[in-house]
Image (tube, rainbow, N blue to C red):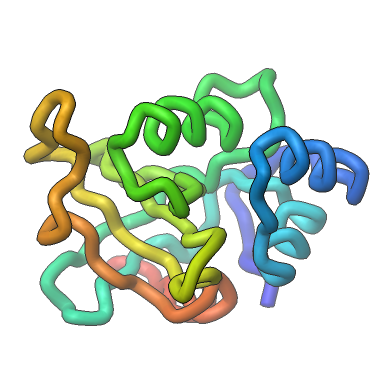
Length: 152
């Protein structure tokens, strides 16, 4: 399923995906790679979502693109949040909500492919995100896209 976008970025090539994976020593799930090849992020028409426990309702305001021209992009977000130990080391930030919380995709381990909402509003400096602020949102990227809806 490919969502409808208000705007999106130039699709990426297989070579660009391989270069990103190689540079960052990770393997992106196939459904997420297909998404990047189709749209490479942007602002989707349907963007509201709930965490699986229904505690958090938010919106994805931007899916980060795989390019360095945009201020908010996959490479920069991976460096800022993952390399600086804000989120778990197996998380790739793939988007943000209106309050600059981030949506992450697990890219290794038993959680591979799962999508999480990471609430950065209570982030303590130098401690990273506590487990209670990380909420499972979908079992896969495809499931996450399928769960998006329009606000009433």
